[in-house]
Length: 295
Image 1 (tube, rainbow, N blue to C red):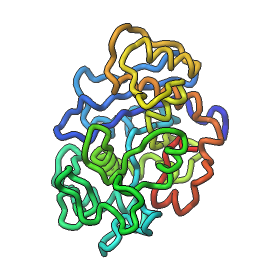
Image 2: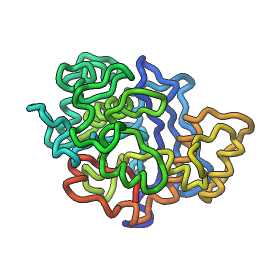
Image 3: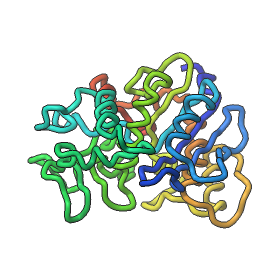
Image 4: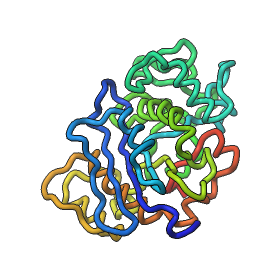
């Protein structure tokens, strides 16, 4: 990879919550030329459609875009996303299309119709009392749900991913991933999504990221990887070789996640090792994708 392949690094802390505008969405941009990462602000909460528009029309041409969501569901463990369902898609792009089609009437890129679908709902944990009868495989080693190969690699690095089939709890990423897949389906002809798409020579590239991995890169240790003060955030930024951001006192963790991850992407985005993780095969790339930074 050319050392100047990417000129900018955009980190997006995503949200699958209900409603048009999300306080949980934050965007931060870092320039390859240097300087602290900066928040991209609208003066009000972001909508998911606005983020899609930013990616399509406003990001600099050669931007690496990290999104904090799962770009696909587990496939390798059962040879299918939805074993036993005749309409189970064959690859990630077909999965995105299926979700978007079933949710066509849902506004704001929501995913409610998919998780309520007669067949699809059987594969998700909806609440403590409502667990789909196909949430677990028959030989499941734990009650946590199914995981992708990339998530096993994440665990090997000391972070704790949650199954994308889990829709319960503060740490759940199921709804954010499903809404994100709807957006990726809309963007499929406009940006490359690595590794589902090969890395192109130029143009914007979307990667899945996990902010806890970025926090580890910033020297954050232990189980709590959220940074809620400017002092802690700036200590991590300095660890990544980034100038600090202005501010003192408390900061919301969505903003700090985006700021830290933009700086982390700038630090590692041209490292060939991050584009060639050991567990990534062509079949995994096509069906499950990968988490950038899961080595």
